[in-house]
Length: 163
Picture (cartoon, rainbow, N blue to C red):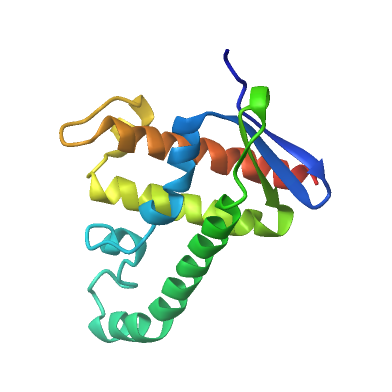
C-alpha cells in the first residue's frame, strides 16, 4: 500500500508530518547526526568573516561569535532529537510525528545545517544539487538526504506561514 507523505497544520500550535515509512523515518532520525560537527563541514558552517583578508577580525569572530553559533546549532539539533522521540506508527497512515509550531525554527535550522554539512562532506556542487544526479564519491543516500531535508524545510516554512 502506498502512503502519501504530508505535512499538515493540526492546530495553531502543531504540525503533523505523516505518511512516513521505515526508510523515511530513518532518514528523518539522521538529522541531528548529519548536522553534527564534522571537520569536513567546518569551513562551510563557520567560514572566516573576512575570508582570511583580515586575520584579527577572523580571530575575533572565531572567539566571540562562533561559540554562540555552535551553541545555537547544538540546541537546534537537540530540539529535533527530542521531537523525534515522538515518532509513532499509525497503521495505514504510516509513521507520524507531531512538531510544535514553536519548534519549527529549530527544525528549519537543523535541516539546513544537515544539508550544508552533507554537501560539504561529500563535495557536492550546486550543479549536482540542481540536477539531482549522483556525482563521483557521493553516496546516493546522502544526495537523497540533502533533497529530502530541503523539501521538509520548504514545507515547514510554508506551513509555519499559514498558522
